[in-house]
Image (cartoon, rainbow, N blue to C red; front, top):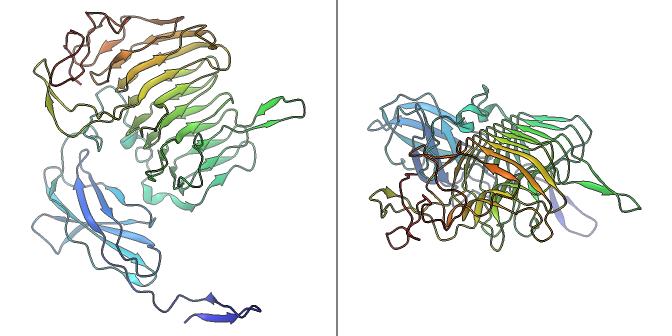
Length: 456
């Protein structure tokens, strides 16, 4: 029973206990199941339309063999009431299952949802992204080698609700399921084995802020700036952008003008600019997909504008926002074409605050973008010198206008860079070259008279 106390202003407030009108919620709805990789089901659902006058505390996901509506094979608890999906593991390949979900609030359990679609567990070992794109062989998949591959399930993480700001140099933030953003205001900070899911909304977050934000500095009386997040390391984390449709300009992991960012084995999605390294940074073995196109702004997998000696290597970078309807291309190959809203690049480079020297962009899988690579050339306008090399990268046939707008004069690009389907080097240096080999759909036919020998 609630205990009430009268304030001096004659108002009454509840000191303890739950409101007497709390009841169990209605059932979750729109439950859907799919099998992204061997032995697993990805289950999604919609929150109850009526929460019973209380917050949802957690969900229970039940998996049953298709045709058996009573015997639960696996019951998984989703401990954060704001989460609307989970990955269920340990299922039998080739078996067809259905999923059921119930919600729990302080008033008890909801009725069980109606069953999901029937989903057969695949025997494939390559994770299929929700958009339908497949990570190619030869690249790590952080969805299976990240938090889970490190021996941790999401249920092993401790819930943390709210934004988190560092308190000291050398701080380690780990094993948390964070519903908010992380602000790094100290040096040598490590964030590892965490899921960071931004819940910021458009009325409280201004454009340019990041989910893991090392873009912090102090300025002394003489106008000298000191960056506060040098040597920030983010490892084995999932970074998820805000689902607020009105918030369209949000970054994933950013060090700003600091030095020495490490991003390794992270799984980053639903943000505009996914990774923003600076000098002496190492960006390796990350998966980026479902880039959120920002209105009137760039949306890039990798964006680097200052600092020397950055390494970008062994990443799977998917900048494309794909469509949903397959289309027969002019070369007779059926593909899923882009949406017209794509406004992004896989790699965006510009030396906006000085020189940007000795970049190494090696062995990345790159797919999508207006141009897959878009770099400013040395001394172009107010931009400084850019030097380095692209080596051993593999390009899909997905992009809007071509694989490259500019390489950046001073960057080398050799024949180790190839097309995915043919492992063949195209004529890379001029997007208008008649021998350029790329695919772009325009009313069912290739454009610019280009040859089309690649398959995404």
